[in-house]
Length: 201
Ligand code: GRF
Image (cartoon, rainbow, N blue to C red):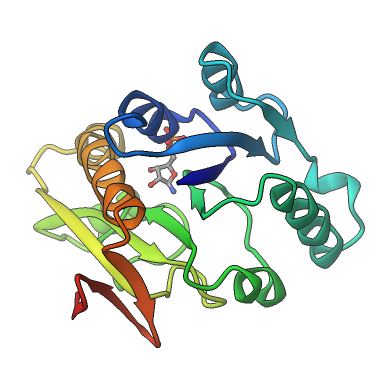
């Protein structure tokens, strides 16, 4: 299957997808960032993947940015759009256009800690467990049907950095696995549920 990956930063999840691309039958057609300095763009270039940056600040509205992003994505006619650390809220118009073919990775055990600073918030709340979720994207921020999660124990002396590091290790394993389910045609969005082999997840 053909995928387009959207990033905003370091791109360590992108790297894990690049490293697993042949195993998970994904042809990465392009990597797009809203931040031209995102290190992930260099990772993609190193693997000869076409890259684009579209600066959201040069658009006067969220709608205009999303329309331009959508036009760029459509040039590649992807089967799947992968948000791998893409730090922009997308309009409902955009998410609805790609319903069922856009997935996101979020560093918390959703529905806990939607939005930003998830590791700090998990520590502040005294959580014993924290982790990562992969979900289908809908117009509700970090609120679409959950596909899979992976958890880590929160340790007594954890800092944001140490916790984030352990969660990232799980992210790098979970995301390629979920993408593979999708490229195998096993993972679908059915109404408001994610299903694997026809069974609700
Ligand atoms: C990850 O923690 C991901 O879950 C979140 O943003 C971070 C991106 O990290 N959405 P990276 O750019 O993949 O290293």
